Image (cartoon, rainbow, N blue to C red; front, side, top):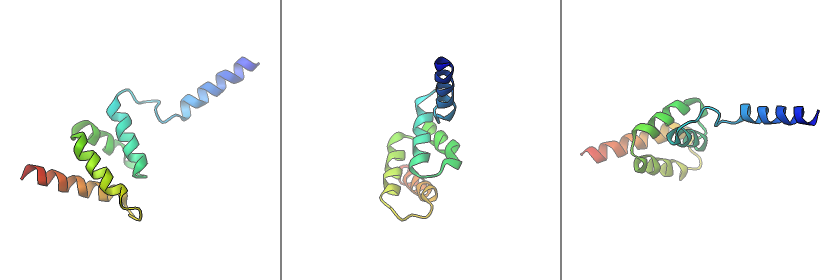
Length: 91
């Protein structure tokens, strides 16, 4: 009986884990960004950004947002800073 309960515990842990479908590093990185910004609903966007955008640009935008403790929409602020950084790099 102990083995069955142990098996159920392992299965529940795997189901509850946010990493159950993560197979690449950029997916985990994008998910971590979504958690830090408290914007889990748009985690696919952050995963795509982690895959396609330079890490340095993402880190700068993330640090900019995290320095604003009272921001109402951290996701919106993050995307604003990403756009700003992209435009300054191209000009």
